[in-house]
Image 1 (cartoon, rainbow, N blue to C red):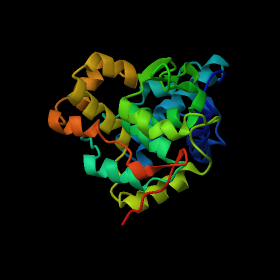
Image 2 (image 1 turned 45 degrees about the vertical axis):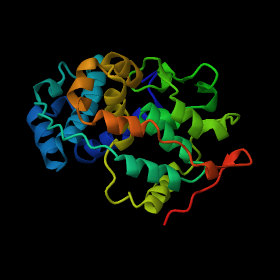
Image 3 (image 1 turned 180 degrees about the vertical axis):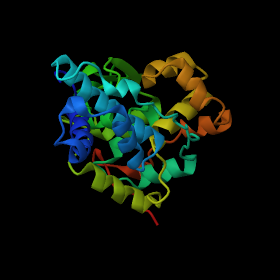
Image 4 (image 1 turned 30 degrees about the vertical axis):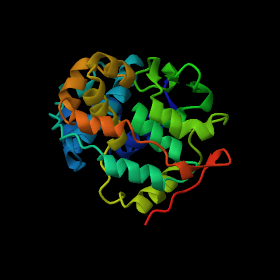
Length: 267
């Protein structure tokens, strides 16, 4: 498993452990496709999660095949379920403003980078301050830290520069420890925790970017997606006038105090 991220390996370990709870006492070559299919169906999860389990099992059985523990991969005969792509949900302009206004000082960069640079959560968690080039005007997502294992540069938009200005001379990782707990606290203060949308920041970035700049090819490069994905998910979700307002979301003057940001009061 050389070259794979710690996050991926952890996910692999957790999912295969569930499989081992049922089939761990079996010789791997005796496990039939029908049994695997029945087990996947018994998980009671959605189509995307079920297909993810299937992919992780394929890794296991391919490893066993390379070691000559079995002659063929039974996953080849386990059908991949059709994934129902849900409607993309994004944050409104007011929700975005409120989230940033209610953010704690240490977690604010996470929200701002997600909303105005579109990095994936795992990419922000791995991001170091040294990879944000204020002078060059871009964020470098290194290949080793990218989901697609390819390096890309993401433009540092003017409003994002403003949000990150108090942190310009920080070192180390962008995200502090206990990220999830602090994120939940921020969303509670903003009144957004209960109705939080999956990938809301990234989807908001893609939708508002395409409506504002009308450049799907550039957006695909910055998000690390294909143009086809961009058109499928983000086209015509946002009106141009709203997109203009989104990219004008700036810190309040009182957000800067002695070179740092003070927490705005969220009522």
